[in-house]
Length: 196
Image 1 (cartoon, rainbow, N blue to C red):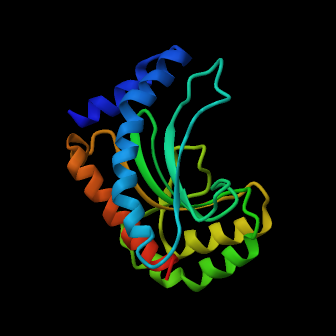
Image 2: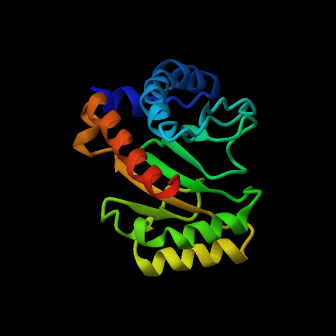
């Protein structure tokens, strides 16, 4: 079952062994997701690239999560708005992310404000987070969105992430095909708002 294939990786306590499992069980899934996602993101003449997390600095603690990011920057993704698909030990997420290292934060904030109505129309399945390193998320409501964007403007450590989270017990996680379909749909609707 796909759920066990992905989440069992995080049961391994040894850092080297967990990294091996990430490379052999999760990264191939990310490679499949890349094949589905890049045509969506690059359909409007954009040039998105994929970056699979390497965890190169992990020597003592096993990674608590892993991800693949998509950005229009050859050198990396953290400094620009980007899409991210990732896995914790108990959930899978798909975010449009604005992190602390953004180079042109004010222009991203202005664009977020101008796209607010589109994001708020996404429905209850879509969530909001203020920290890509935490599991927590909140409802994507007008009040939460405005508060998050305001915080992002005035607090250096603040972040804005918009997307979907599937908890480990979600039945869609039984099937890799269902997960890939959810990822495609999520990236598609987010990019129609953000990239247009």
